[in-house]
Image (tube, rainbow, N blue to C red; front, side):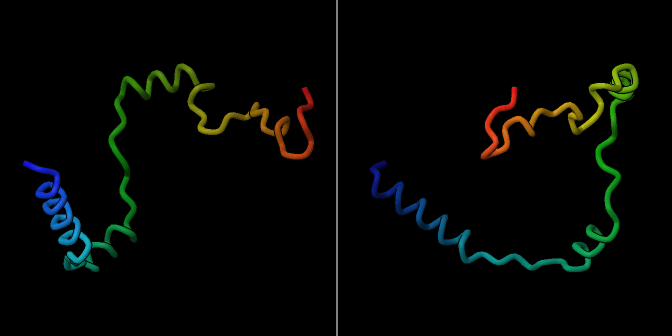
Length: 77
């Protein structure tokens, strides 16, 4: 198949996607936004590991050295 035919098919698919407007179920969207999900179930083995190593459980690294690299101040180390 030549490049012209391939490009024509791609253009056709792109045009279909561009102008496709599915019916939005606003009731389902409202339910989803008002009742937050509990998230994915956590593996019990993972919970044990997180309790065992609490220093690796935090999302934010408290000893972040970002202040050393703020613009205009240069490196303070």
